[in-house]
Image (cartoon, rainbow, N blue to C red):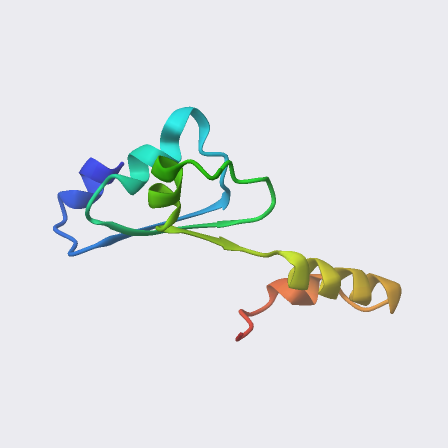
Length: 94
């Protein structure tokens, strides 16, 4: 996929995924790509980053976003009998 993307000549690449499973060294392989500036995922599954030096280098490009605010708002709406589907109507600012 990165090779196909590179065919269009991007100056840099940012990768985003919902569930960062990063199986079989995927995080290390993606992070090793010089044109990949950032890898973004949510904290829906634990991200396997430990304290070994080589893993810290790869983790520098990784940004893990918390889904806690979205879950909290959904629970609040359910508790108050409000619409949960309204959460999907439009993006909300930070």
